[in-house]
Length: 124
Image (cartoon, rainbow, N blue to C red; front, side, top):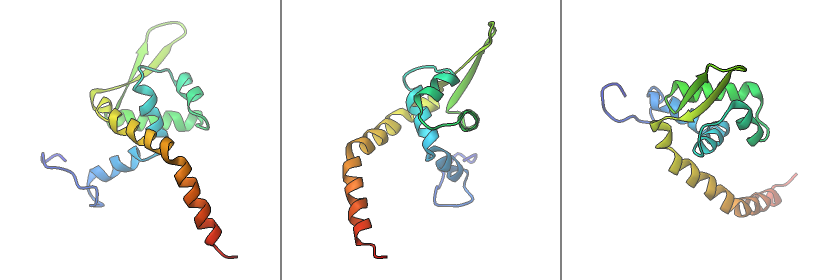
């Protein structure tokens, strides 16, 4: 927060809540994970992230840029070229994002089994 004190994600009025909301979006997490490998063009990101629309990708990149996690670079070339890369702040998130992704991938079988058990208990 601007006062130099820590944020409080449990306080609805704290700006940290908005950052938490953005970082918990699936597209943000996937973009950050991919950008950890190095700069990417929009078309590369869209090809790598199944199911994301061009509009949603651009909106998410702009939010990440606004919050200081991503930097947009334009090159004066023909045709014009733009890429996105992590800032230092964005790079500080990489271990957390990758750990989260790896946990999900490693435990997806357990989650699916829990869903099936739950769904099997539900009556008509």
